[in-house]
Image (cartoon, rainbow, N blue to C red; front, top):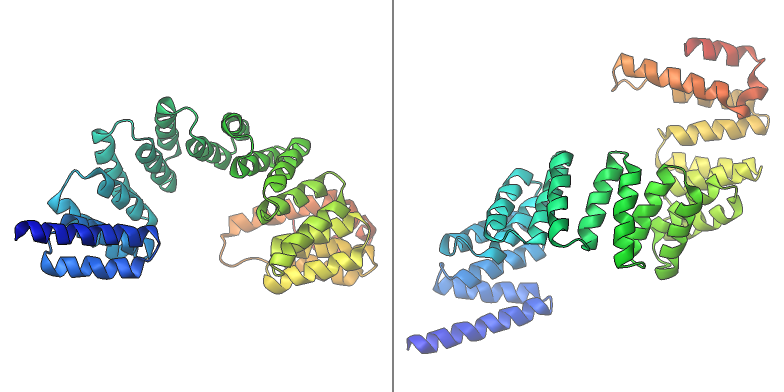
Length: 353
């Protein structure tokens, strides 16, 4: 009798696994519930239900079942790993780290656990500790592309782009056609203004995946920086075909038209960007530059005043810095030379002091 019950349970578990494999999570969940009605302390039913709920995006509900499974089998490594990743998804980073630490004690060479712990440390802003964890993972598996990229992204976030590029280069030796790595390297090269190599990275990424719209956008930005405005516009058009309200693409497309001297076209794009975000300071600034070029000096000055308006959510000291930097920017900007002798413009600059 006991054997029959065991066999029936095993058949149901096989069905659950098959349904999970086919991504039929709701059906699999019903079978787990059926088993749990019979026995609340059934380990596999609790563990599988937890995984299913996590897959369905019901992370909070899944946690309860992971802990139920761990009460039955406290050292189950798969459950610990899945619990750690689910806690991470819920932004419970400290709890996530504790779970990964427990797992790493049991499996000191578990690269995935070490990497996930590092990711949680990054989320807590503990970048130095995160780098140490990534280094530990790379001692075990020096060619792990995910770890190399994550470590590189942390360096990039700290503006240590040369260190970041070293990580991405190691990853590209492992897989020269990894699109994520090519884009990450391209982003760091763009930040240090190595536009030639950045363009090569994004172009390579797009040869592999022409549908990577972020790479397409970044390539457009590089083209803007390298006097290739027509090619930049083609890039931004591709991005806007996918998302016609992409403010960054509209802004940069406007800048490309400015480089071509087509100021009316640039203004159209800046206006579209401002429709999406009326406080887009860069769009206001660039539009004011374009307005000067078509002789609309009063409109340009009104817009400059708007960009300089105090944002009441900031502190006064921060406003002074913002106004000072805006004044410096305007004084150095060739586009505003035509306004240099106008009284309204000069008094506006004085007020920025």
